[in-house]
Image 1 (cartoon, rainbow, N blue to C red):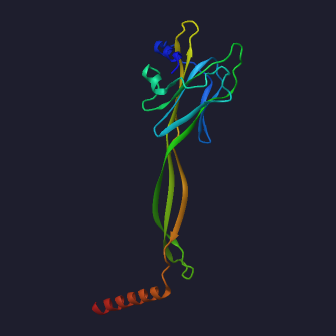
Image 2: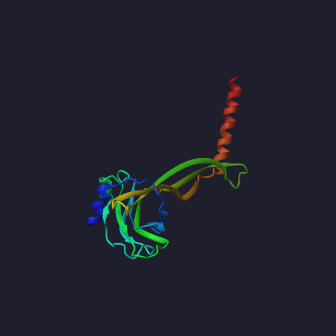
Length: 217
């Protein structure tokens, strides 16, 4: 861990300020996008079933950014940065050369994995389905398979206070939920349609029962 992380030990809470940053998820990656308004730490972390790996600077990061990890999310949480409990990730220092203009784009990125499970649900319904018997009913069994993804991302940003030399808590984004339910399969299977002979025997049986009941009355 770089010595710059030691500055976090003297956090000076200066209130929240917008850094014009947001989290985006695409193609199996979590990205911090937008434009910086000053040099700062970006702390990207994941939890609730999501994990991050292979952190890297984005194409929009300022040129003087230190291209190596500055500390884990746990390091920052240990000194008071509000990283959610159970979240893991990394904090990176993004720095510019004197006079360098900040660019809009991806500032930091990492590979993203979420917890994925499947849920199967079945149910039955009666439908008209006998081609030879108008109005005849059969049992249709439905099977639905749903993919369930779970996870969350968080982003905190810290900046150096030019007046005090301390690291100030500049802002924090609300946790980004990655929870999603997607129906990936919906199929049905129809039961057998009663054969004509079977229906004839059932009808004959019912007639005999009625006749017997009449004799006994």
